Image 1: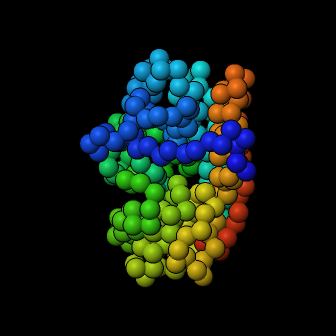
Image 2: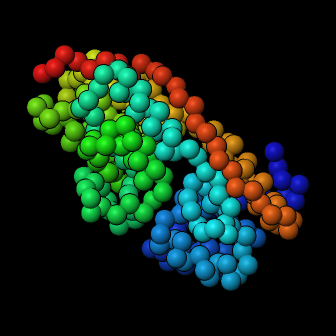
Length: 257
């Protein structure tokens, strides 16, 4: 549906490496919707507030005075991990989204700073069930990133996990490709779960076990919050829930090696 005041949409990058690109402080906009909000971006919002710009954040925390459209990331990821545990898996690895703007990927340890809320919450959800599961961070949500992570996880047969909890469907698709590349069957040798419930090119004949989120509902909720602020009405924060969908990429672990 189109907003009654005929709103337009301008997409901005938060990166400053593009010369003369518009920013949150210079773009001719009446309101801003942030997709995520890490610590550095939070610190930069003071100037936007001084400008009087209404701000809504989707899946992030931009401060107590900014309405949030949230997803039950931790609870949903816990559901997927509990499903994996119910199948009998004990050797589980986690493939995460980007942890921060400065960290391009690698193993997550106690010193790794996770400034991206979605990554942190989904990791907590998995570790609520598997507190000692190793976690490998990627540089972003893509099949190629999942493939690279999967190659690391499956490189050593003696240390290979029997299940991988991926923080996005695209990452999960890449992990499955890496498993096939390593001569492993899914889910016979390794189970894989995703997150988001989005179509993944080339995934057939697999139907991914995943958490389905209603992305359209997130956009509508953010639009309603923006409309309320532009009309001088206090906006509401919203918490949306995911639906667990079992596919054919998870099953019991193989016989112990």
